[in-house]
Length: 362
Image 1 (cartoon, rainbow, N blue to C red):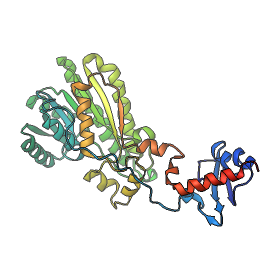
Image 2 (cartoon, rainbow, N blue to C red):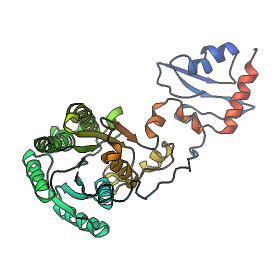
Image 3 (spheres, helix red, strand yellow):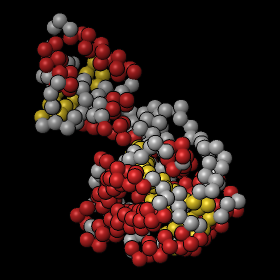
């Protein structure tokens, strides 16, 4: 009755389902579906009506899947006012997108923020915008995280203008979609240098300075759900971000003795201008993404910012080494081979049940 279960065997039949033995023991029926590894392409006829079709459309004649409407995003801050009063936060990639959103949240909660990236003009504009909005100082420091010397200089400037940080968010990232066989060595290296090496350089440089002065801090890295699962067409990013996840868990175990915590957020699809411009330039994938998210929508920058501020706050002082997936249920929805049964209508379920009942005893 269903299509493509990742199997070794193809079975085609167009008929009312056969005997009870066929139905239950795998002769092209339900047993074959649930009891053995078969790939089934089928069209079932009930009273002359063909309601399942061949291949990937077997589940439904319609692509209109009902979406959840119970999960509207909240825009307000989760933590109480001044939760970061007197704290210093350093955010890489802080000029745009998620970085800008997290900086805005931290600054609104009282933190003195320092943002960094290669684009100093964008940084300065963002710093001024957030400062005028929150009333708290935001500094802009140019830094290329791929270059250890640039990182060292940026950390020295950070300590000079604001002091040793209480919060460090590794958010700088780079990505593009491409068939892996089309990648040059330089293309691979560019992404890994930004995502994995850049995170390592920033973490090591700041971590060593904190150890010198015996000060703790909360470190947070922003990776992705496909760091865990892997993904085609973004293999450099998937590989690098998986490395970041492993590094954060490793340092959570090792540097807790120095008062440092390390956590990771793996966001699902978040509508940010930069990411969607690069990864979905035509806008065609957005509908597909929403269709596979049980919560029925994309995530928001504010939701990620709320989780980030919690993980970096004293409210989360017993949370370290955690990798938290925040994706509206997309990962688990895509993981189960039967989850596409949500496309089957109630009428089709009734017809299937009637078919099964008819075959009993035959």
